[in-house]
Image 1: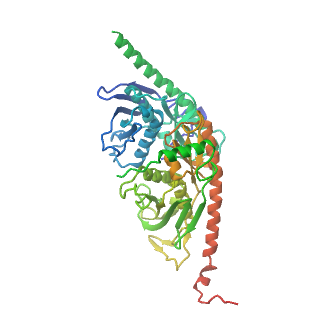
Image 2: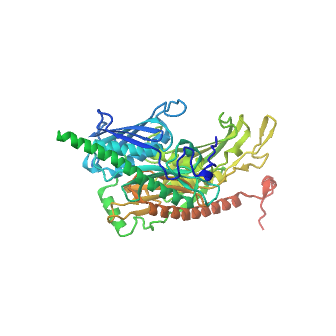
Image 3: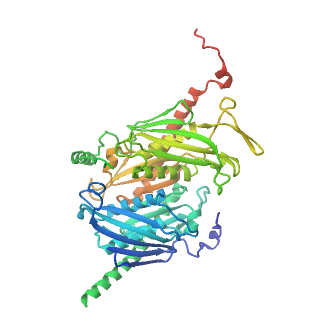
Length: 254
Length: 299
């Protein structure tokens, strides 16, 4: 069902009233679950994710099955709630798309965490998706970053992610196409978009996933807007982490 | 499940040392593919791709089925990939490994989601009958870079394949055998090929990343990050998958996309050349010449 995004060129406002470079409301909480080693709740617009981190803990399975001897292994479990979408749907575990997301998050953090400090152990990230409205992978990555910080696992820098799209479809060759930041669910259905995650404040791209067709010339603009959005996300996450740190310090002075 | 054998410390150090001296173990340049070879089977829609020691067999089949109720005008196109224990003892049957799932996802995204095959042309009677095209990808030998090789294999097979001709009269469809009517080629809209980059950062000096194309199995096991770019020769990027791994500068990544475009143009030329040669070999001068009982005269 095609949506009508043609009104964009008139007022330069998107379906939900944002301009091209505006993020949706991003709220984050850290340390939400008392029982987990680290946890977070993050919502980007109407996409909401709870993340809990267990570990670094001893490898539970038979030794040699999965754990590499010299460094910790990051494993990710994603569960999509049945009520997350518009229609109630039971999602099986064998979904290849979810499996791909799990490996993406795991390998992204494997390269950013100081895993060599924890030989023969695993760090388990479990993500519970409560509500789905676009930018799913980006929300999961951001939530995992916060939960891992809460768990106190040393890492090089924050992994922050957003999506970026383009107002033109792949076929039309109009020069006026604007890049868009942080697409919602209905925009994702219609427009070409990519998910980009950066590590730190430099333009270091850690994850880049695109599944739609787009002209090669348009990629640069989309990537630039996405990387810029990641910096905005990083600032928001940083505020949350610092506020938490401050609270802990105040608590210890009592 | 038996665990995959990791490269030994010696192999690793040798590889790193060579990389520091700008050398690859098999002596290739950093952006050079291994020797690519494409053979066609006796049947239509069978290809055998060899990329160095990697070997992939692809088989296309077509049958008439009912379309999905929510998409009555679209035919079906499925890609199934299989990594059997024949390829390596670390693959178990009926238990897909990560390599296999990622391979099938990448093929799916590059070929199916980008609309390489026009599924609407596979419709026979809306909502009742359509063609189901199935591509079986069998990895016969795994020496790295399965995605690129499988993509070449499937696309070449799709171009080589001919489906039986049909005619529709009202509600009845007649499918003609290959002898009755010349079979028709599939309608392909564009040809997206994959190019996989492997990144190595900690092995070399600080702040520098070495990028290799067409990594062998050893190079794949030692890499710290990879990115697969699906792109067609018109410069339409169909899919990018940099699934984690070592972070890479955004500008450097755009450079990779340009390299991928150049490589894809080369691959496209190679595949169409091989297809032309194959068509010439098969063409015996029409049906009459094929049916003729006359022997070739030896003068």
